[in-house]
Amino acid sequence: MKKIPIGTKSFSRLVEGNYYFVDKTLMIKEFLDRGTDVTLITRPRRFGKTINMSMMAEFFDITKDSKEIFKGTKIMETPYAAEINQYPTIFISFADAKRDKETVVSTIRTQIQIQWDKYDFVFENLKGIDDAISFLMERMEDYYGKEVMVFIDEYDTPFVEAHTGGFYGEVGGGPAGLLHNSLKTSTSLKYAMLTGIQRVAKENIFSDLNNLDVYTVIDNDYSEYFGFSIEETKELLEYYDLELNDEVKEMYDGYKMGDKEIYNPWSILNYARRKVLVPYWVNTSANTMLKQAI
Image (cartoon, rainbow, N blue to C red; front, side, top):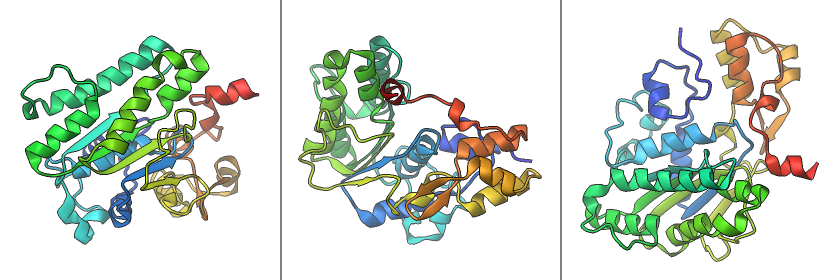
């Protein structure tokens, strides 16, 4: 029996580690079909944002050979299978940029350093670099002769934490400048996708971006890729000798993404593991800004 992937953030680990896998790979097709410079998708916590971003990065990353990982998935049955591992790719997560100023700053620096270390062979001189990501993108394009894919998970976390923690003026400009220079002014960008809980308006970082698509919970686009559909939920529960009965529906249903009825993955996976019908999602990380507003 396959393991239950609670909290698993790496797509390669999900597939290779014998975890239960819900195939969301056609999200890659939708992303390429749209061809939007920058795509921003906002969803609540625990709806699969991080694992989807990991999947996207794993598929496109030119430094990897991911054919075995994606073997048998839906995307490999389409002409887009030819796009696998064809682009220099940056994948950054700000999910851990929380709690205090020191942690927020440290997380941002660490995530950038990971990408620089990964592509250190494209540099001749690392000194005097102000625009860390945009400069890295430029060097990657020069090296590979291809524009760069950028995936940023939980992009809004540093802004939210800095605002609620009272240190926005000290650090807010850092991540804002990072996003501005890599998404607005860089000529080395192929496509970018960002996920977060909300669209941050204070820095207006997307104001003059001509080709930006924003998808929220009310939009049909991408709605099937974040969370489990009725069919996916039913199949998962049956695999673990459970059923999608009225009690389960009453406890975990109620999410509407676009025109689709969606179940929260965190709740369903925890129920499958513990087989106890309790509200798991409400016990996850709280939205501090909402708490302050109540």
